[in-house]
Amino acid sequence: MHATTILGVCRDGQVALAGDGQVTFGDMVVKHGARKIRRLHDGEVLAGFAGAVADAMTLFEKFDAQLREWKGDLRRAAVELAKEWRTDRYLRRLEAQLIVADADQILVLSGEGDVLQPDDGIVSIGSGAPYALSAARALAAHTKLTPKEIVAESMKIAADLCIFTNDQVIIEIAPGEEAETPSEEETKPAKRTRRKAEQP
Image (tube, rainbow, N blue to C red; front, side, top):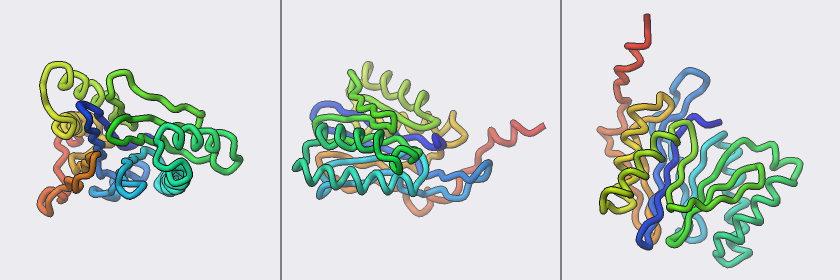
């Protein structure tokens, strides 16, 4: 469920959401450039997921419908999705966590009914979350980097430390900006030297 890293930073009226591209099946890496960040509500809202892809797509559709119903009110849409997710017999079986954000706020949603807004505007989910979150908080506290720069540097650190996270990172910005995606050369599988060191 958590074999990925999604990181969001809200700072100075801008939100950056980043996700790595690695997909694992058991102990095997099956994809390096998966897209785990989506734009919803005509591109005004960003959403990222950690968990099963099919489950996440179902939740994205539900959340997009809530955004339309509540005319883009992120917090209200998040609360209504969390209610439905917790109480619906089908939805509560879905295994995923979501980060959703617009230009003003960033929230974490879970199937337990949680809708959490971080005090410092920085949040992360997935197996590499502790590394990405720690790096982002340090950079936010001691530098004047933009949200985009903070998530980019923090995801590099997470990729170096978490074996379920790679460095093929996609970054989305709100207000709108084209996604920053890895170049063709960058999407080639990176050599993970530390895995060799783990072998006897």
